[in-house]
Length: 406
Figure (cartoon, helix red, strand yellow):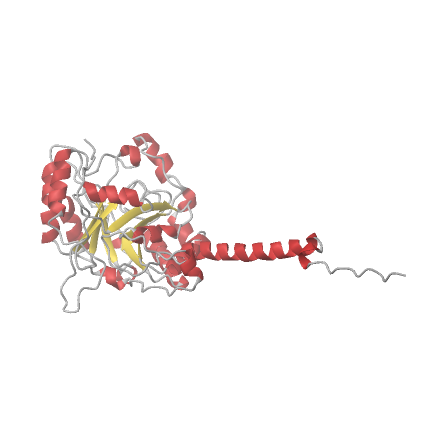
């Protein structure tokens, strides 16, 4: 009688699909977790790089996914105080895709004669969610981000005069009293927490040009009342403080007084405890020099504060005075050290501006702009050298054919 045949043990891989399925699910869970962490690290750790080397240059040296997964040490992050009183003048620009498009910044630098901007200006309405990557992108191409944060639904692009009241002013949901009463506290606080998490400094121009009548946060329209603006501004600022978003450079930015001569700027000022920079919107329109454009506003502001000033929107209208204004602009900046920077509106009507303000509107204007910009010592966003001397001028790129607007 033959002995019973001995059964061979089955390899664990061949014992059924259940074990294989469980192993496959575990592997996928690990990979998904690693990928999720990588995405989180790439977004929430905003603007991390191998090191901060100042403004005026571009860097693609941010740690990759593997570096982040390995727990690579976070680099030093510049402080807000490094930017408040700069070692030179900020050269900013408001461009179509700012601050995300690095190629756009590169072209801007070429158009500016090889000089890179040190500030990127962009806009966000309260109907939009803040994107922390806007800070990352700005620092990646060597610029300090300047966010114009607009408490409204948004207006029509280039509205006709008879459309302005309906699209830009009549927005009762965004009355200043609603902001102060807390209607938007959740949105404001969420934005503040996202900016805090980003860590890197961000300038915020909140509810700008409040002395005009073309936005719903003006006290003279949309059911607002005298005193409402300061209350709303302070409320937003206080929510940021409560959230710990101390990396914000608060920029109070009226329009120049030319179209609003009878409005008291002092009554619209939130106070020095709530403001880091004073901004100004002002364009050269049938004026031969920026002294004519800005002097009355500067003198008025100096009656109640001496905070550093930034011209947060400017450009020169295409008229008989355009070239005279542009030629005078850069010498004027050097004679007015209280003005620490400017943002040129590098847009036209097709890209969202009210007119063609680009310094590339003609070859003659571009050449004058390049020549004047080259005379400035640009801010680097650094604290200076140990001996107290200023750091070098902003980085330059090699000049190439500009391809500028004819």
